[in-house]
Length: 152
Length: 296
Image 1 (cartoon, rainbow over the protein chains, first blue to last red):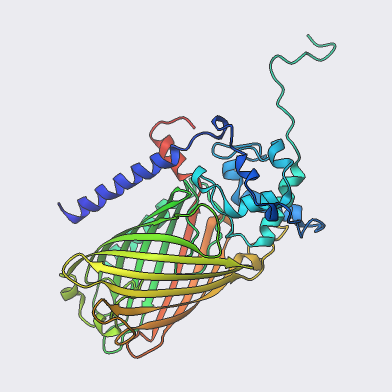
Image 2 (image 1 turned 45 degrees about the vertical axis):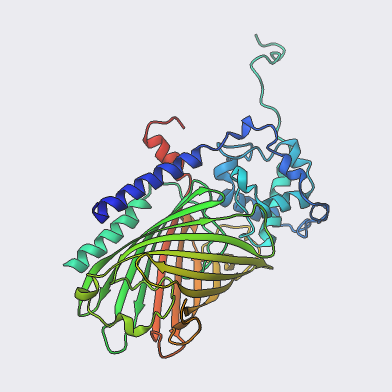
């Protein structure tokens, strides 16, 4: 086999396998235990306080970091995207800052969330501040909701 | 003419792969050229990279080697990478050197003080390869004296294994790579090392969008060299380099890197000036899927 043909075959096979693997990941909505990893944070990590809790610029900086690194998976409003779950779910919003920081640092590698320790610690704490500032998302109105008075 | 065609090919490969039709991801890259840290590509992302090395050659012609890398995050624990290598030896010729296919695996789920990554690479190159992406065995400057017309007739198929150990402490990344390489013909295992230390100039993120914020610059230093082979392990007849390096992570997913490397002994090239540009593309897997008709 000519080297060029061999190289092309290898590349095609590689592309097919890796794209298939990347897409084989389950949708987060089909995983009821998607937030279980947060509970695995060790007590010492959970109890860590956010050193930037009173930093006036932390939320704004965290928002930019979210847009740069998290939005692709978790969606524009952090309410969940194609790959990542909602970060405005009660499980996340009620979690302690230390637990969220621990999850950011360690990722959930087997479920597709990379480790984010490549971001320096202060940036991870800024992200935590931003996420906690979002609050729990209000449930989307359903089609069977009672109509407002005066409207048919 | 060959120089033109070859450069054009590499430039086109880079530009076509990172045009405006893709969605960029902000990069947060270390400045290393040779050393690997434990951070893999984010799943589904593709990073297209172009790197150059200008090397001085005592007793021969200086050279400019270059390679294009396509780095893809297959999963959060597996990154796969494909390289195309070429080089120009001044007053000689420009030649395509071959390809490499590299895979990195993360065996542990969580972060630890030291994080191991397993690295496996297959190389299919001719003898003209001058990328000096890793220095192993008794690779020395004198090996690069032969003209391209002779070395291009050689054919090397090699397997390279690395143990990557990396830690990040208080913003400092410290990485150690232990390298072993085996030619698939009857040659002994060769060994090498690469060490790297780096840190962003600022650890806190800026509350405003900016290109020149200190957080976007990562500075560091690399040291790499050979450790002999199975029959003559050690520092004798080996080359070693020390290379300060800086990376600028720009908006739009672009990263620029620069690193002047200096030979530390008489077996080393006096100067290896490296530079590179890369762009990270988000959601590449989804794009390919849609290309073949899948609904988003």
